Amino acid sequence: MQPPSPEEMQAMMKAWKDTMTPGEHHKKLNHFVGSWTTTTKIWWGGPGTPATQTKGSAEVNWVLDGRYIMRQSTGEFMMPDETGAMKPVPVSHLGLTGYDNYRKMYVAYWADSMGTALLTMKGGVDPSGTVFTSYGEMDEPMLGVVGRMVKYVTRIIDDDTHVFEIFDLHAADDYKVIEITYERKK
Image (cartoon, rainbow, N blue to C red; front, top):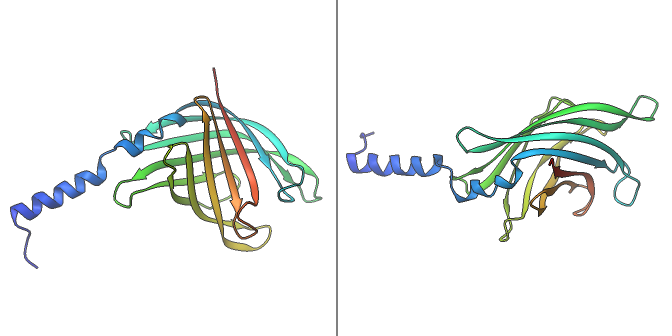
């Protein structure tokens, strides 16, 4: 293999620089930066059944020189214990969201204290810049399911509110299982 010519090397370096430089797509994530109170609803029986509801908080900051936002949150989830009774369980989350200039899509990574899986999701934003939709897989250890397809939708409601939803695509396109409402702390 021949080494690249100086002109080829310049073109290669420009392509690399274009993929590493935050741009307009990254700026669309500015809404999420700040301090938030959260309300989490989980539909254990699926849509149409009563949801459990808990409160929490989140801090979101730019990291890695404006390439990602990092979300750190704490709260509780109502979870069934060994008898089936619902009990509050402390939970903390850590997530990164950014825009992949090379693949031209939003990417996110999510981990929490409720398991050892690292969730990944990829997707886009609608033309208004207010509805982010991503897809990924989620395991269901309680059901023995690996790689269940899910849809993640984040809707910006106004400057101080956004809603994050998880839909179980294995069950149906509109089968919402989790909803987290974020309200900006004043």
